[in-house]
Image (cartoon, rainbow, N blue to C red; front, side):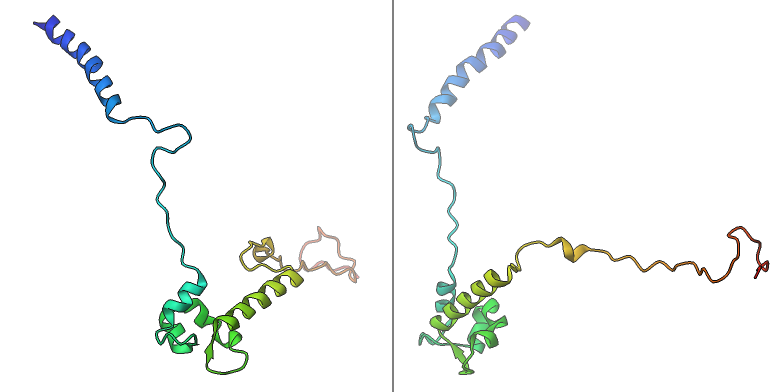
Length: 144
């Protein structure tokens, strides 16, 4: 009885493994087994269009606050003419200006700078040399 069970347990994997291999056919050469999930990124122009609830090509501060918060944070910089709204062209000009400023100054706000973590030690007080007091003199033993 034990031999029959042992034989069954040894033969069973040999019968099951080929059947499992047949269920998942190999992908054709040059193609991936399954495509990776594609996450669509929304461009800033698409986000602008979504936030523009009136669909007039003009994004007001209220519309930006409701639907495009990162643009709202810079709304005053973008609206250089103080019109109360910004257009796609205004945002393009602002992007171009920011790129130019980063190129000229070499500053990239997305880069990590080690200087932000520099710790400055407090100044060390220098010993006064006006007195001729030995360093090992007991307190109150000032020799002049």
